[in-house]
Length: 277
Image (cartoon, rainbow, N blue to C red; front, side, top):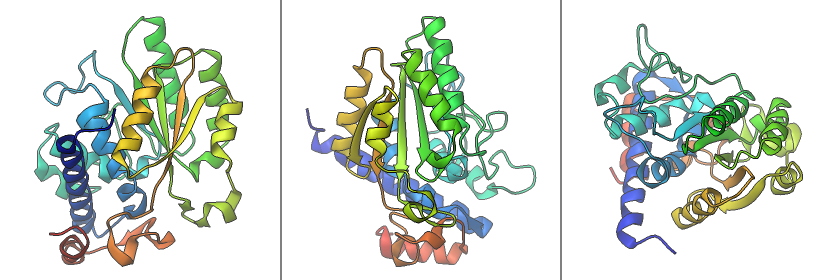
């Protein structure tokens, strides 16, 4: 069943707000991982509005679904999402990666309310997510575990060890996304070390695997709904995205947006021009 127009509007508006706050908090710092943060805003909008069970008043609620942002350098987008949902004060966003902050450049579960796993050492997050999902299985907990990995990160061998383990243990409570924006710090993913055909690879490892438009909420909804119905298989959702989505000509679909300089005034101008203020 397709999303209602009202649901879609809520998701679109929230994704726009995530992108705005991401640009503002990076602009306050002066530098940050813009491209990969903006490319996952729609996925985060869906997960924290419709896809996951969470409680902003009780971030450690045992009944919650977990999110492991393996590409932890995209933390600014997740921090913006959590702040907008009330997990912590919006004022904290201006402290990104500054001394004494609760919002380090890469996600840290010991510092930030709502962060379920410390990440940023690329290639390790899916292993952590698989471990959490297995623990829930053994404890007979109904919680789902979500993970977001990068396409460049998929070059790391540990992902494929995690893929084998998750399939072996039948972790149908594990739902992962690949943010397939086709770019990484050193260039186009296909030129650095090609990872396609990602759907075929994940299926070969025993996963349910689908490919979607990572900026289309109907696509995201169908993929997650189907993943929750899987029996005995984890799911990998290959989300084709645009690096720097919503960042205007300067950042959208640009390798240079991976980690870029940005002033607060520049961020405000991009928001005005590319995100309708």
